[in-house]
Amino acid sequence: MLSETFFEKILIWILSKGVKIFFIFIFAFLINSFLKSLLKKIILGKIKNRISNEKKKKRAQTLISVLGGTLRFLIYVVAILTALPEFGINTGPILTSMGLLGLALSMAAKDTISDFISGLFIILEGQFFVGDKIKIGNIEGEVVEFNLRRTIIKDEKNFLHYIPNSQIKILAKKLK
Image (cartoon, rainbow, N blue to C red; front, side):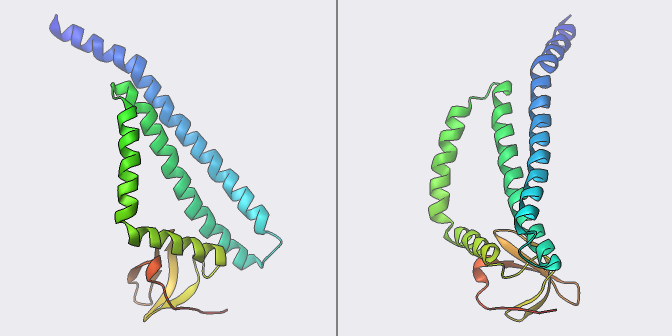
């Protein structure tokens, strides 16, 4: 008899709260997909007539990657915070703690904030894009990934070099 009530409780929880959680994450996935495609259309539309095709593709790819990743992170954080009350967790103290933690981390993470600001200027100034051949210090290769925090370069020996954006002081870009 005890096992029947336990299974009944689980079934009731799955049918009520489990379905809500499922739909929260489905909705987050749909919003993420919609915003990513909207972001692609907006970025490609804005820079379509201003620069050459190859440069346009690189800039668009870089901007979509950086902004899309940031949007995806924010959407899923909101989805998790929306789903937590279904488990009986009060999100008020979590949000307050996140605010205080954010303040403390921003003071302690000076280098990371500097990386993000440097990455933002790299994007705004169009210094390089994914696929460009660049040289940073004594590291030369192709940019395989770029985000606001770091740049990843693959050299001719197929080594990946992870470079924080704030460490990029002198940059050489190979022209085609």
